[in-house]
Amino acid sequence: MVVFYFVLDCPNEYIKSVEVTYDEPKLFQNTVITSLTFQTSSGRTSFFGYKVGKKFVLEQKDHRLVGFHGKEGDAIDALGAYFAPIQAPTPLIPTKKLPSVGGNGGVKWDDGVFDGVRKISIGQCYDVVSYVKFDYIKGTELVSGDEHGETLPEASELVLEDDEYLLSLGGYIDKSRGAIRYIDAVKTNKRDSGESELNYGEKFTLGENGNKIVGFYGQASDVLHSIGVYVVPITSAE
Image (cartoon, rainbow, N blue to C red; front, top):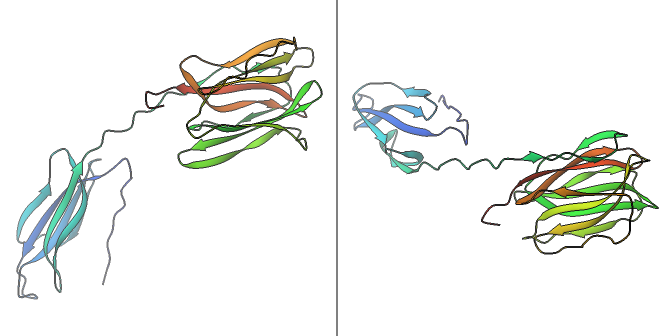
């Protein structure tokens, strides 16, 4: 027995219709399916069998094929199909990369873009941020980001709840050292740490009204030199 198959480019491609031929060949004592021709949403066709006998088409307007049913013996005696409405593509949420703050030393790093931030870890060494690490949410998975800077035995951590998202992150820059001096202002949709009353240098706030933070990037060596964020609009479902 020879098995034929073809592969769809899911989820971008689906089967629109199947042309079926049927006949009563001498090899069998009843009517059987003799060929199948699949047509996909991208215009591709794939043919299997011997195109003899009468034909019919399995198709439903504005629907995609999702399954088959039928009868079988020594061959396929009858064939039907299940169809479902074509789902509109999920609109892409535009991601914006906001300018970073801080100095230009160290090595560039970029965590990328996720669905949200789950945990913020900040290592403070005297009067400078020595490292940062962020954990993210991607779909249903928790993604642990890399550590950026020089790791310390202890770090301050903030863990966000399941329905909580990060709106802004703030702190101070040490311009003389070209580094981030403190990160001490965290605002989410559920809490606000507020701003420090002390003057630690040049103040900064990362974030944009109507958006949530979904990723970080920056530069680091043995200290955090700069930090920036990726943001996306807050949807009505959030």
